[in-house]
Length: 234
Image (cartoon, rainbow, N blue to C red; front, side, top):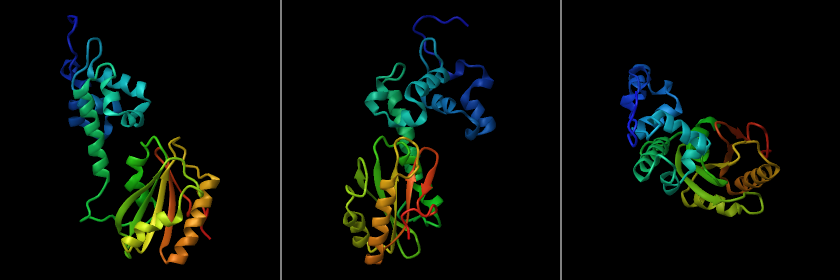
């Protein structure tokens, strides 16, 4: 089909079997590629690119979904084929996903093991561009009372003050806590500093009678439990 200059390319211009919306209806959203899901948000392409092709190019330029999520609204709006409206649609999609991954105070998540804690924070933490340390505060039944975001930047046993980690736990009368931090590189392998910090926190928890249940390092698509590996816990 020959198009006139300046014409936008819509999802409806694709063959019916290639349209992401129709494919979603037939096979479900889980079967769609990242580009197809993104194309549904974008709705239209631009001259020479349909919505799926535009989505594929954006993912390639940004380094995948993680890179796309890390872009600010202004940065997204500056990419060819987007603009403020489409950039806002993308940011809204990521924000809805982030909120869905969180929890309501009336529906407290219970932590049965490291996998539960990782599932609670992985979506948001894996997209962070800087290292951050969060603390999950738990009650006597291992239900999450709150998530405190304490540190941003390079983390080690000398920069993280143990008292600051336990302060919110004392204020909220938490029975225990679980520490999580991310590696922006995507590799969750614990460093020697991670182990040293874990050891310091575990020892302080024994003195304060607030058990440190675990320390998780979050990477891209995977995590490491220092307790499972016997690192920093006596």
